[in-house]
Image (tube, rainbow, N blue to C red; front, side):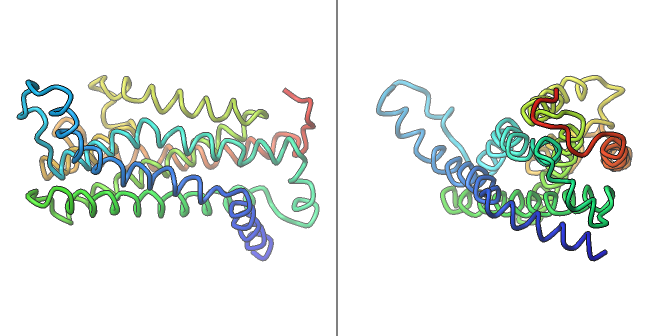
Length: 265
C-alpha cells in the first residue's frame, strides 16, 4: 500500500510538472466558454455579412449551446485526452522509469492502478467542471431558455463516464505500443469508429459512444437513453469493457520488459 501511495503521489507531481492538468483544463474550459459566446455573437455576424439570411435559422438557446459543446468535446476532447495521456505507460517503458519502483517492491498492479485512479479522477473532475461552466454561461447568454439543473447534471455524469472509458482505453493502448504516438492514434481511431458500430442495431447497447449520445439526448428529451438503447445493458457492457482493459493492461505490462530502450519498436 505504501508503494501504491508513493506512486500515486509521483503521478500527481509529474502531471503538475508536465502541465497535463493545465493542458486538459484549458482545452475543455476553452470550448466550455467559447461555445455559448460564439453562438450568441453568430446571428449578428451573419446579419452583417448576409442581411438576407433567414433569422429563424440563427435562433439558438441554452439547450443548443450545451449540445453543441458536447459535440465539440466528443470530436476534439478525444484528441486532447489521447495525445496528453498517450505516453502514460509507453514513455515509462521507453525511458526505463519503471525499473526503480519495481526494484523497490512496487507491483505492476499497483503501478497501473495508481495511474488509472489518478487520471480517471483528474479527467472526470475537469470534464464535469467544464460542462457545468458551459451550462452556467449558456444560461447567462440565453436567459430565456429553460434548461434544468437536473438534466445538465445527468448529462455531465454521462460525459464523465465516457471520458473515463477513454482514459482506460489510452492507458491500455499505451501498454501495448512502445511509441506513445501509436497509442494516441489507436485510441482516436477506436473512438471515432465507435459511432459506426453504434449505428448497427444489435451493437447499440454495447458501445461507449452511446454515453455521448445519451448526454445530448437527456437535455432535449428528458430521458438519458434513446428507446432502442438498453441503459442497463450499456452500463454493464461499458463497465465490463473497462474492467477487461484494466486487467489486460496489467497482464500485458507483466508480460513485457519494463525497460524497452529507445530503439525498440
